[in-house]
Length: 133
Image 1 (tube, helix red, strand yellow):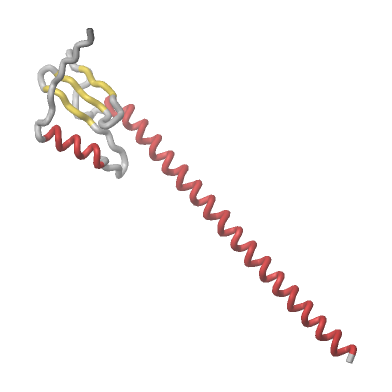
Image 2 (cartoon, rainbow, N blue to C red):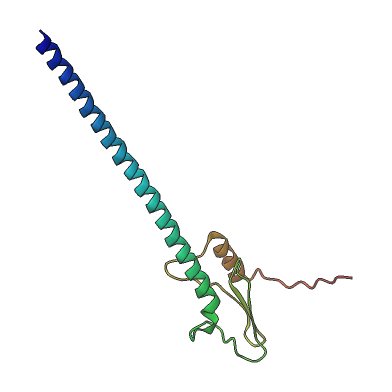
């Protein structure tokens, strides 16, 4: 009878240890998955930041590239960096005013930029002189 009780306790303890080990294994795997998800999120964020910084560099250097849509060196002209809602406004006494938005990679115009483009294309642009006394 003692042998039967001892064997029962051994099975119970062994089953408990196996269950405990399996539980620890599941917890460790879950923790590893959470840790990898955090790392992936951080890497995605860093990649996005790199693309954004690359876009800012492209915006800054764009006027120096040969195929920039206006001649920034033409006498009497001025090219002004705005940044938002468009990147540049170019003033040419012969050609007029040109709004320039610089995009890199697969970036597209925002809804706001598309709306301003439509307003310009519709001729809904005006001049105001504001005097401060």
